[in-house]
Length: 242
Image (cartoon, rainbow, N blue to C red; front, side, top):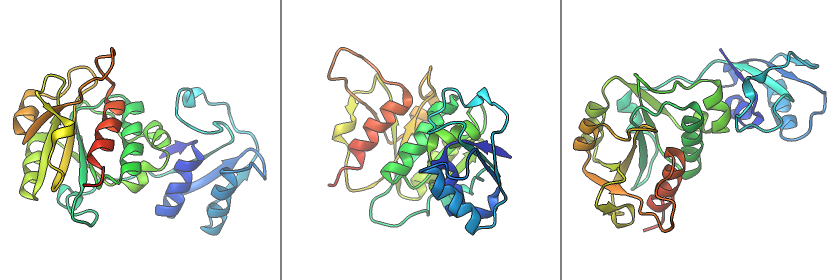
């Protein structure tokens, strides 16, 4: 069970999986937006609601939440889906997917889910080992992205990239040392963007499985970006109209 504190995250669960919300606590009967919308949805779906201050919880410190402490909800965590279903998610002539090669920081993972929800990413592949789990921090930082973007958890990322390629999805790896640029990729195909670990980047076998390796060339004196910020820049480029 997860304790969520971001009203946008709680609202997304109530909209997508209302039965997963077991109870809601708010500190006042009229907490103001966006909590009012959460409260209305909870009552509509018959979720037990309690009013009044709860215990002080410092775990929310540093989360990208709004009005932390104004309320919380106990929810069942989102569940991964089979990989074959992930590649069928969504409709349209061109799609984007993400694959994360051992991203370990929950803040980064939450930000990536939020970005995926913003840019219309159809699904995310996560590695089972040495990766952050989809926990309360991830869901709160994602601000609803973890509810709207399906994900799979795999034991072998290389095999998963092969499955993507079998489904006509081209695999694009990110590497600071790559000669190719994100700005030069073909625009008329499905892409899976592969992002590496915060410290070591993509593993060797992951790089070798990619159809293409690209970098995001800096235009200023700062030479690099963290994984979530780099993902935002890459997705912005990749999602532009042809």
